Length: 228
Image (cartoon, rainbow, N blue to C red; front, side, top):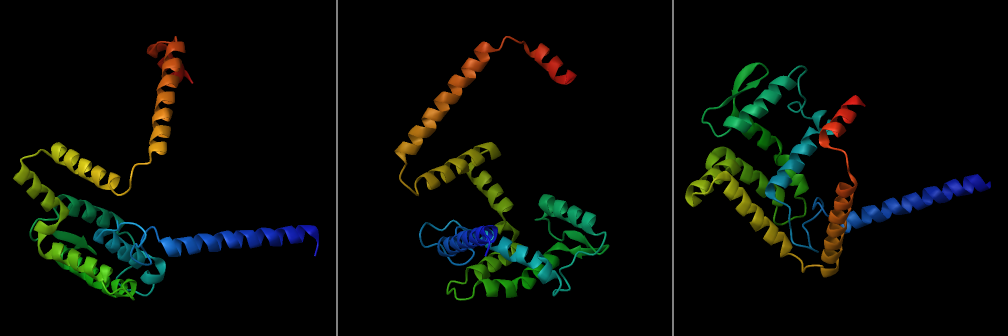
């Protein structure tokens, strides 16, 4: 075998080993929890995320070729986009109707159809899992269809009424709760925090130097920029 051929074979072998190592790491650690529940770190995979898995799988080409309900009819994308907007704005409204193949169709009935269509996929994804997390996530979504007070938007409004907070105040409080939760998962890395603090100081110092050396007023800068 010639030297170039041997080099190509070596390159392919190295690439294959790297891919195998990456696949093995993902299988063991499974950062997205697609293959098994997390065991090496606190679970951060929500029921909504599991439902997105089932929905994404169902939308793939190999599923759409075998499921007659899955393909999007030609020219119907604009109608689907309008449906999405309508659900986002008025999804909790009783008796809400959407457009389906040019006809009015109850949103609740359509939602139940979609969830029923994901039942088999969730059972496959739950294979070997006693807790059946995907089936459980599916039932949670069905409960939201049956009782709109379980939806995130309704729960948000209820929380605001009970606390008397504005949306901004509620969002800030929830952000702080999430921040405290994730900061509490692991002890602080003092060395990394010191590196970040040093980088921030260097950035501010560099900004000060640039601003001190800049003698051009904004109007002149803008005129030059627009001229280019």
